[in-house]
Length: 309
Image (cartoon, rainbow, N blue to C red; front, side, top):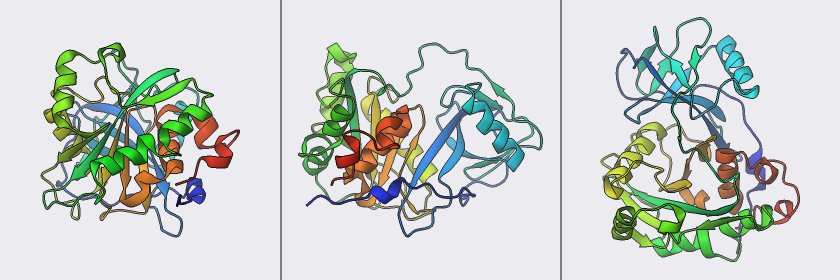
């Protein structure tokens, strides 16, 4: 029986997330600015439904702590297209770092346009076949979703109503999610060999991280997963994948969200049973790639069946 979670699209108020980890220190000179959209669980209190994060050159993610003036200014720059999330660099001179958080100094946020070429961001707003990978996360104590790889694969790719069927319906057949990876989709023979070694079911692999998820926040967890998958597959994510979905057993630190995704990027993270909810899947991938006609406005075919589970 499919479950329903339509109310999860209601946004919540923004505030600070708890900080864990390192002591106060100087951050790197700059980092790539990202925007994380978190989906609140009805009846729970989400610490923030949208936050600005940054990723340093080592692939480590930190929360940006901004005052109201800085946040409003950054919001305006993003809205008018002056700042591209997932691509442009924010200057961190004078900032201080504590745990997974970076507090900027007073004054205007300084952002530099990216000069890199060919960076792969989220591409689900383009038509055609879109390879997606699902990663079932296992922590150092063996905590993981109880569903088998086959069950997770079915939940995402092959149930009667699933992520694949809904994105196809919402795009009128122009966009097709696939777990059938091939050289025709941009995968090299070496990449396909490494993927084949790690795939437990079509489109699903496991990654065991050296962290206790009951003691670490989402930043530490998803960074650890990314690092582990990079190591297992032998390339840096997203590589040839259009999107990568992390499935975590449950959230224990700074919770209240069902899932979150980075706008204009490739990564989404799901905790507890919520990876199964088609509405959550499509909503998060919509956040990643700006498919707002499906994920936010609930128009056309999506209005009727987006939230079936």
